[in-house]
Image (tube, rainbow over all chains, first blue to last red; front, side, top):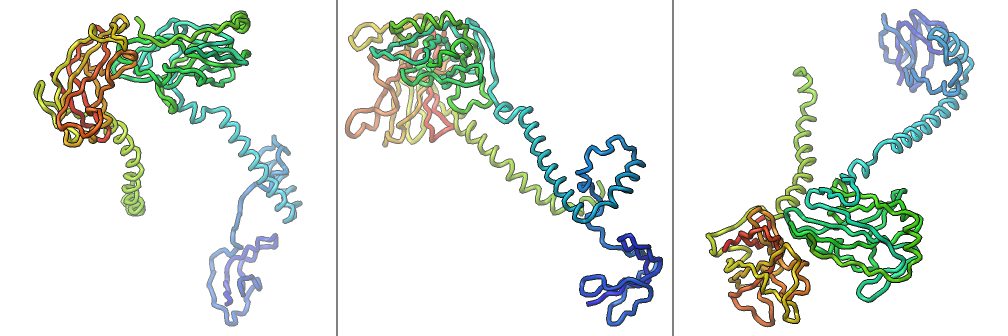
Length: 289
Length: 179
């Protein structure tokens, strides 16, 4: 099928002079001829009198091809840009140069996007941080209100060996024994999460080597405070920089109220605990005043 | 916005309605399940000492009393209780054609201040008290009418006013029994 676009103002688009009144013959999907007064033959005729005829503007305006020019003439004014980049660099580009430059530009864009993404994700709070627990920070001896219950960390001590129900438990690290006082406010609840956190953010849950009834195994009755010792097994190197964390949920800690109390443990204490080989009995939970 | 805008977007706006319903249904349903059906919110009660129909059974609170001085250990010696707490017993009577239907009920004592206290508390570990529930226990066919006794630990300052019986499958309804 052939089409004759007749009598339009033809802009060839390839640098050739414009033709104020010419015809364009399209045959078989390709431009077969451009010129004045072309014979129609069997082609269907479109009257383009008073109209502009130009090639389809596919991808007509973009700058990715300029990627290799990045940094060249960064201080150019707009007229300078037209003169230098479009007036001198552009005519020197061959189609294959433009293709290669565009691909390089696309790769650079991808790398930049990934770098920007990494920068954003590393420097903005992630979902865990946004939905993290509400921390009530305090110190030893201070009562912290966690909504459903109150927490007070009473004391901390340590040992190289602990004992419970006649069995002894040694460690290659150090036992940190924290006495906490817990009081439910209005309804029976259990405290499901007890852990130590070190300076690097690593957490150490209460040891499962001994029976830790206070974590998850003791239902606190409202207004009946219970105090007991919780045992944590940690490396010696981190014992001087840990804080105890307590919360009601066992696993789902997002948006939960959490107590955080730094434990004042110094090097000398750790050394003396480590040197002591006599088993230290773990204090059982009991109702307190 | 012009009438043309509404006409142009009418199908999208219509589609938005079910889309919003679907988008909000899941979280609202989840919230409803967890916070309404997951907890006791609707008490079923009767006159003091009266029978309450709940979970295919009838139940009532026969008696509620301070038994602090009567609790013993397994050597029949007075059970040592921490200072500042009291032990309360609640005697419940049930009429149940099939007591299996109320197995696993949760018993709580309610104080005048609205606090609740669980039966069989850790504080009574070592006391010679039977683990309380809503079923008679024992071997063989249970009787259609029986009593159970539950024990609670309350602060000395708390005054109990009712016992709640709740079954997970019947929530948010629960039986609130008063003596």
